[in-house]
Amino acid sequence: MIINKSLFFVKIVIIFLLFFQNSYSNNNVYIKYKVENDIITNLDIIKEQQYLIALNNNLKNLKENEISELAKNSIINEKIKRIELIKIFDFSKADAFLGPIFENFYKRFGFKNEKEFEQYLTSYDIKINTVKEKVKIESLWNKFIFDKFNKQVSINEDELKKRLKLQIAEKEMITEYNISEILFEIKAGDIIEKKIEDILDSIEANGFENTSNLFSISPTSKFGGKIGWVKETQLSKFIVDELKKMDIGKISTPIQSTNGYLLLKINDKREQKQEIDFENEYKKLLNKERDRQLGQFSLIYFNRIKQRVKISEN
Figure 1: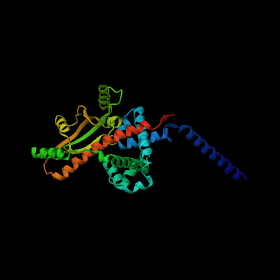
Figure 2 (figure 1 turned 180 degrees about the horizontal axis):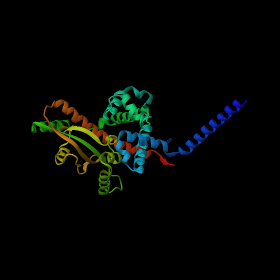
Figure 3 (figure 1 turned 90 degrees about the horizontal axis):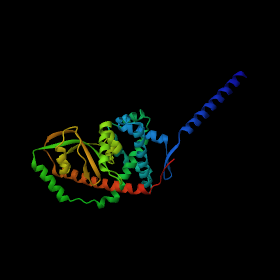
Figure 4 (figure 1 turned 90 degrees about the vertical axis):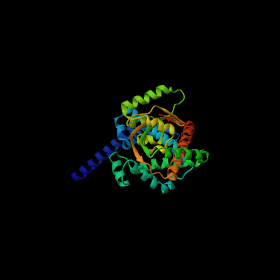
């Protein structure tokens, strides 16, 4: 009888603790924002912070309000894209083409295989399926933009070929640049000088990579703005002329582009003996120009649908 009473007491204590734990949890997880009918909780924002820090460890050096704001914007933008995409795509069937795209994603961060990447994510309490879903959304968005706007891309192919031939003919050695970027836009009411000053102050305080996360509207922002190695033949003459003026580690003056303003940083550079397959280089140049224009369409379209989406703060 004593044993039964003891067991009963233990059960009551366990039930009480579980109830207390659930009550505590419910009181501390609350809705922060609504994007249409999708909710974003404070826990979602914390998880997004962990995800962004996992992609760029330097972000943990930011102030709490800065990383929180970054995470909030990141998750809101993702929700907006998903709301648009589910009108068009069957998400359950999208996994079929995700494999190679996801492999390229984790290899860009230096991981050899998915298992190694998954182990790394575990240290940030992030499930790999969560990241796969994020990559899926970006992949479907890129496909959507391509399908919608590809026919509107306008490229003077003769001019591209002429430019490439001229660059190849000019020298025996060719320069390759390892560069990073911050692409920022000037919105209505912004003062360009103030925006540039804010970005440069952030670079000085937080570093180029973190500032790219905070300010850049380019897809490379998730990678700290890193573009990697690019041959000068794959860049416009204007940008090459700017890079030639700069030393390693230096940052360019703002370069106006169709998408906004561009700040470039030279991480490294090297001279390579010219062994160029013209057709291969031309295809790369053509793809780069197409991607640039599609990036412009993507930004314009996203801003347009964002204005239609109801976003509210609780």
